Image 1 (cartoon, one colour):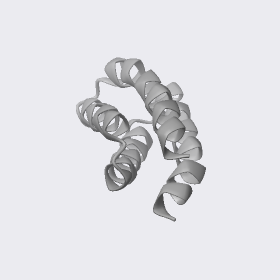
Image 2 (tube, rainbow, N blue to C red):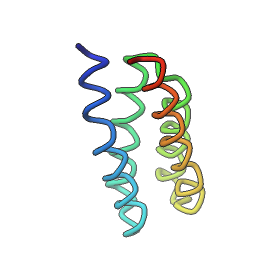
Image 3 (cartoon, rainbow, N blue to C red):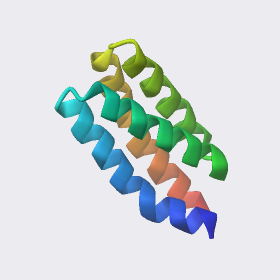
Image 4 (cartoon, rainbow, N blue to C red):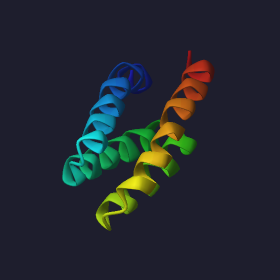
Amino acid sequence: MVVTAFLGDIPGIIAALETSLATLDRGGAQRHAHSIKGASASVGADVMCAAAAAIEAACATGRLDEARARASELGGGFKAFRAVAQ
C-alpha cells in the first residue's frame, strides 16, 4: 500500500520540484525535496533519498544550480525503483 501510494504520488512531487527550481522558488524546491526525501526513505528508494537530501541541502544554502543538476537523478532513481517495486 505504501509503495503503491509512493509510485502514484512521487511523479507529481518531482514535477513540482522541477517547477520550483525553474522559477527559482528556493523555499518551494526545498520543501518538495524534503517531501521526496522522506517518502523515498520510507519505501527504501535509497538513490532517490540521497539525491533529494542533496537537493534539499543545496536549496537551503542557495545553490540552485547544484540542486537543478542533481534533480535529474530523481527521475532515474524513480524509474529504477519502479522497475523493482512492480
